[in-house]
Image 1 (cartoon, rainbow, N blue to C red):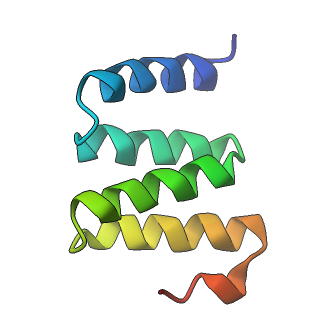
Image 2 (image 1 turned 60 degrees about the vertical axis):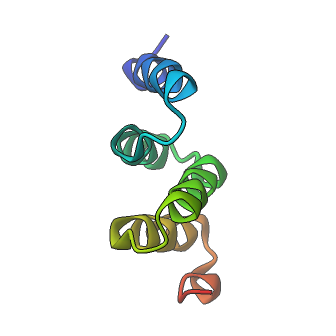
Amino acid sequence: MERRDEAITLLNEKIAKQPDLIAMRILRIGVLLDANRFDEAIADAGKIIEIDAQNVQAYVLRANALIQKGEKENAGGE
């Protein structure tokens, strides 16, 4: 198992126990982006936005994931 996979597994466990823990989701998004797992990163950013619509970092991370996925046209916002 790669280090990235290990990190994602650990973060998944933490998030399963505390689904609204934004800091862990932000960490997981970073690892997911590094692993080119864009759809999961986008979903995580969306969950953060559901929890806290004022979380600017979540919008930036979602836009970053969309751009890296090749969907630049969708990265501009709602």
